[in-house]
Length: 116
Length: 115
Image (tube, rainbow over the protein chains, first blue to last red):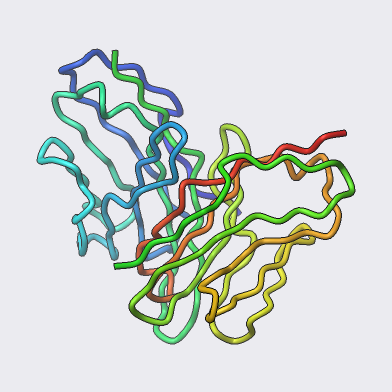
């Protein structure tokens, strides 16, 4: 079946612009994660959804970052007034959680954001 | 808090030689440990995971890892490197293995295979 897809794959924004990054998880996956991967670093957790509920947003670096998943499937990560330090690859992952069973997180290819 | 440390940001091995990528963890609770591989311009792919069922874990593409609590380590090995193994490898830790808990990643090790 189809994996996790993300769009756009590449985004160039001028400093101060707003951007929206989209994630289409695997159909039926309950859990959805956003991670930020700076150049030469490992991914860092941003936020987590279970269906449409945002259960953890402790990793969002500032109030310029906002994520939503209104219908429990597609998610959008929005960054307002982008700054150069926002340049990174943004990864989305989804998984199917069922109590007592183990499931892995499946990652999308990421959106590479460059802020100039 | 949980964390992982990957020793060696770059590792080079000859084709056919042993691959050893190091990962040490820190966790206040029994950890769940993972190794992911990332090829250029692609997402992360799970190689293997430790879930306390067995200390020696076998994964895809001939990789395996051994959980050593006394050494707080979860090193990744492969007996014979192949050119297709060239990629970035990430060790990660989580509090659970139910897919609903965030992963904390190391900084990664770039593996280069010398022909």
